[in-house]
Length: 364
Image (cartoon, rainbow, N blue to C red; front, side):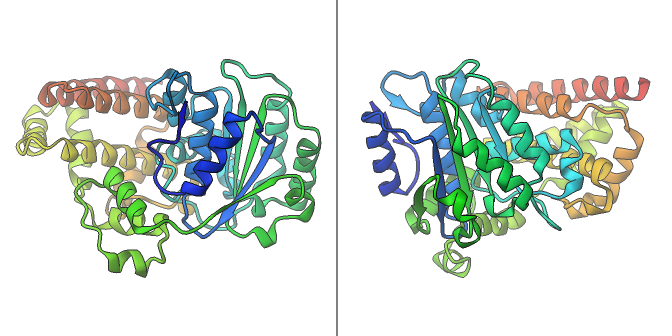
């Protein structure tokens, strides 16, 4: 069995876990720590895939139902929590949407700011989940990013889970500052150090996230090899379809096929799948901003600053909109494009589906 064959960098960590798996010596809790932006959380998701992948020769395969579910954070045996504001934790839909973003793009930073912590409520929810055996996989995997952001009450509650871990459960803690992790928690976890990513690995990750981006050695050094900061910089300079996304939504609602065909022609004329893929991502970001505006108000961090006011108006107009269903709809059409569906037909069908979806939201 081969492990982590397509996971970039961290050869020492990959070798360590490959040996652990081959000799069946998996610990119940690990503490991932090291350089900022080293991809430790991304590796935590990779380990979750490896532990629950169903392939026979290579894990993770990235193709089995378990691997695909983990990438969407829809696997019942994999949980992820992170530091956020109280307002985010008070909105289950918003929290889940951010969690799914991280699972889909684990090397990217989440758009959260303000007073961040991991509340006692999140730990209690994890402890409730821990009472149950795996639903459909071999292991339950709990990933906790930013363990140092736990309140003392939350940390003490979490400590009880570490002291009495259930069978077939692996807890992965990720810390950007191990010196601020309580000694009582550190002593109950096996530490795993993550150094800064090498340039070769950074290029490999960037090529997945932004295939057309030009990445210079100067940028890598300027960002101190922090992959999250590098991706943020590249995202801000990547080709943007912010206005096209807004126009596509408006034209879909109105059934304006002249405008829709203009946008579709613009997207498909170069026959470049990366362009249409970027459009789908921007469409999702546009709707995510509207969702955040609805549930977080002025505390929201916007992906697309130029569409901030338009997003607010959209959110006010469709105050009963099921955003998760709309995200699923867009992601489904994006997947169709990746399977070589005709772009003109796929985008036209998406426009019709969006119109129906938004019409139902106005009726409620």
